[in-house]
Image 1 (cartoon, rainbow, N blue to C red):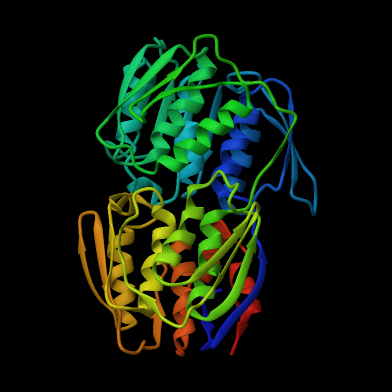
Image 2: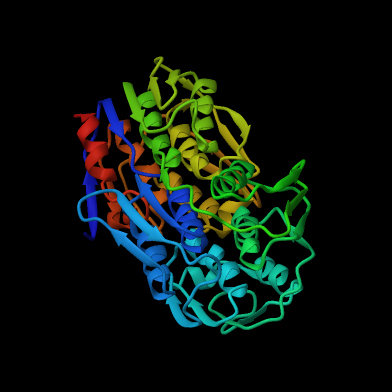
Length: 427
């Protein structure tokens, strides 16, 4: 579909059952693939990024049975390194597949080529490659230095201490942590600088523990994977709903009356993005929650905030869109990781919010949004970025028609997003 026109919407109310978490789905698939035993995965996300991981694992020799018309997948683990020792993989723009597979393959004693879409070739990976090389891995750049595509050979792995920057992408640390048990563990990772997106690392650590590997953590600065570590299937694992996807519906409830309830995440969620509900409360919305649900309703007037979004950078995009409806400016701080996502999200968000009438200022790791008195109808470019499409769909709640170009980009994480969004809306 070339574009989708969203008509003006006056109110949003109802309940949404969330699709599975992208972050948990791809982590679980990889851990199940290199664990001993068979893992039954329930609630797996059905989206492009997951398809990339599934196809890659099949090419690498992992036996996977995905049952038709269900969210259940059976993975027969390889019990360590992948059985196929020579392969070429194309991973689209799926960072949650590309980065972890890079590390896992570097420790698998084979010869591999990893490539992706044009934007993936623009996303830096040097910090992960440098860390792997420091352990003796053979990882080479096939194109521009510091970026995919990559060629991986059979290096002489020497496990020990490795230092990694923490302020570029948490996926680099996740990749290293998940891969180290392939070589038996016995390595310590030191973090240089501030570690961003800590809740995503927490997801990684909890899932690794579910598969039998308990990482020792010292104050987010040092992570030790014990010697003789090896993954063992937990049998059955259930993927909870996607908290980042929940943010769009919760924001809609705050903006357009509600109540809107999301099911699949709540107070008991392992995902840090559930904290976006606290952001909405700080802006003036009414929030309630249970173990696996969150509900938001509008209070009549939202107010701008000045907040640090280092821990929840994905949901911060929803905050930027919500700022259109607040009284006073909103400043999003510590979001430098936006620059190396599916697009340069700081620049893209500033540009598209400007079309809607907002006045935006930006810096290396911050964005300030001054809302307009009245929104303007606009055509939104999505930059092949699912979160640009979903977050800026909220502008239709401002009484104007919004055209979303390339709406199918939401297949990356939430193929049914627009159908669900319009199902809750009242014109």
